[in-house]
Image 1 (cartoon, rainbow, N blue to C red):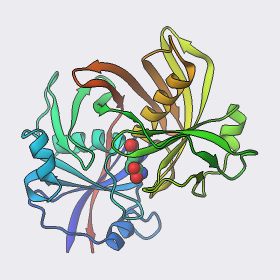
Image 2 (image 1 turned 180 degrees about the vertical axis):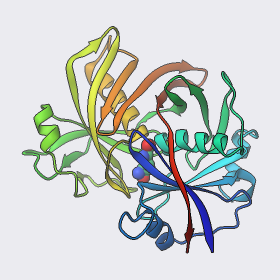
Image 3 (image 1 turned 90 degrees about the vertical axis):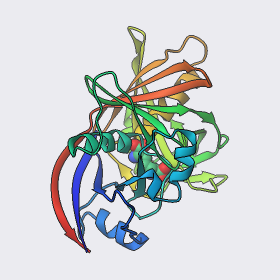
Length: 290
Ligand SMILES: N[C@@H](CCC[C@H](N)C(=O)O)C(=O)O
């Protein structure tokens, strides 16, 4: 079987995308991991299948939530495990659909995309694409986090954005730079479904012209350390605002090793939502025989 793929990224969080509109390509965990392998495959932090919501079982829930969710982002991590959501991936996915003529997204228009974490609204903007990540939840408690090269275990904050995160504040940029994230951080107690773990430090000053500034590195569940994580950047901004207390801003710039992401918290009908914006690039295409 040959698959025509496109390689894309959002702030260096990179993905292998392919279209399977009618849901005819059923890749095993091992095949997905082989595609994402940086030495023996195309290489990427995740593999994204563009499939019509009506053509896969999980799509029924997306269509029940919003029947305009024609497309479903079938997301898998680099080890082949499925994830509920990917904030950078969904922005790159929207660009992929538009550039390949599979969907249209005019200025000011919204594209509704199905994911395992629920439907998400994506819009184009000046810096690339923006996604409304929906309602967020303080979820997962405050586990202790250990990572190699961190002198002491740190308390984390569990946040759910469709997928699970634990955010940890570090003392300084030096500590952030020297943390060895090549190993899975140890959580105590363990997260039953695993977690993406974000390490953050506030920049100095924290707030400039009403916008909060932080730096972040991440160890993604199922993919290891990546250059960026969109839902992770949103979780990091939410946790920092939580720790900063009353008066902290609702708009944030998050510096990740692969660039800068924007995060904005805003009131919606069903509670507070968080939105993520930043670049979404398509880099090259090719054919892959499996
Ligand atoms: N890179 C993504 C998150 C991808 C999924 C994650 N590794 C998980 O297992 O939840 C993002 O940009 O949000």
